[in-house]
Amino acid sequence: MSEKYEALKLDHQLCFPLYTASRLVIQRYQPMLKELDITYPQYLVLMVLWEKDEVNLSTIAEKLQLQSNTLTPLLKRLQQRELLERKRSETDERNIVITLTEKGKALKDQACDVPALLAEQLPLEEEEAKELYRLLYKMIGKMSEK
Image (cartoon, rainbow, N blue to C red; front, top):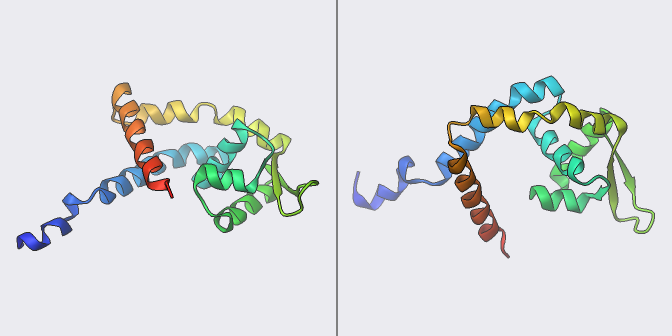
């Protein structure tokens, strides 16, 4: 391969190991989340609500860096499963307020072990995991700047 095309080699792409690592980590979550009967994207939404219940749609979208049109079907499914409620804000009709139901709050207790169980499956020492976390959030922060 000529030098001109060297940059096109898969081994030279940062995006590929990021994509692959993300996919593999999410695969490790799946058996644990299956026991909770939720998907990984639903787990992310629930984690936002377990941290701070009663937030508007834009807060969840911002935290997860997702568009509201991506979140809406996710939230509808969680509402159908009676894990959360979506209501129009009393002070601003344009705002949709998301709150956990009792069932959604109870799921938090069942999910408490998930992060530790996942950490046990990662082939990284604690310091390596912290450094990876730091670097990824540095990258996310820089790339999110507008």
